[in-house]
Length: 228
Ligand SMILES: C[S@@+](CC[C@H](N)C(=O)[O-])C[C@H]1O[C@@H](n2cnc3c(N)ncnc32)[C@H](O)[C@@H]1O
Image (cartoon, rainbow, N blue to C red; front, side, top):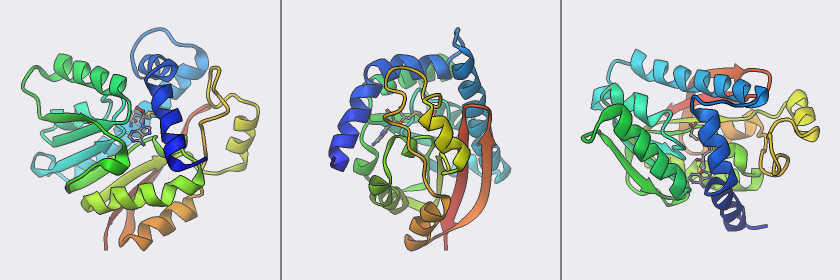
């Protein structure tokens, strides 16, 4: 399967059954136990990244690209802190939802610029590029060119999160719990942390901060890479 086939599958999923599922997980409504656990873990990942950026005390001077923005869980708090955010997603439905949530949270005149785009079609350069919980949907062979493109768009910093390859996660994926629902075992891939770091280093970056969110059903390694 080519990268473009992978992207078509992911895009169709997030414009259909995946849209409803992930909008619920990232929202406040009723969800099952597994989804609730993923909601809590994902919120922790968002809070970690927002706290890193706030600690630098320069958010209002920054342009931030949120690649694969989903429903705006990261873009909205960053805009609230004064950053100028460029949020994009391969799913039109996700972008519509993120726009509507931004309008509710921030009013008409907010500083988030939305677009529908594959992350490898993003153009321009941004102080910081962030891509959270997107690489999990792609197999290893797609990762180097995706990370390279994101790094090329980042003037100073790239923040990524992904599901790290561990024995326990491999087992969870095998028994099908990691992705609740009908397409559960097809589109969740784990990645080797060493390989992701190598790709970042090959693209002129080095790791500055790192963290790991682990709840029962949600695992996300977060890396902040800065230009060497
Ligand atoms: C699990 S959600 C994470 C959303 C968001 N980053 C967050 O953490 O709240 C994955 C998102 O990645 C988007 N996505 C998947 N492949 C993409 C691609 N190639 N380019 C841009 N967005 C993509 C999906 O449409 C979906 O909204």
